[in-house]
Amino acid sequence: MGGRLMALNAARQTPVTDSANGWVTQPTRWGFITSKRVGNAVKRNRARRLMREAVRVLPVVDGWDVVLVASAAMVAPLVRMQAVLAELQALALHARLLKMPVPPNGASS
Image (tube, rainbow, N blue to C red):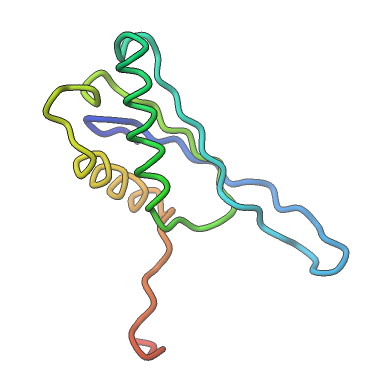
């Protein structure tokens, strides 16, 4: 799945067995790709920093391997963290990687 600033590829991890707990899911692993098409080293590092920070604040489910591929538009002068976070949220929602919000007071709907 791709957006204007980045593309997201996700694959389900193979669950591992634990002798005490049975099947255990591992934390989601993230990979970041910034090719030379994005720009010079300074621009590629900025793109990686933006993606890492957006991932850090995003509540995702466990058990996935996710790769984010930056596009050249990510390092444009007017692109800010809010735009990167909004696009990553949209891509993760489309891929069903976001944790569902807990209803208030534990009520189920």
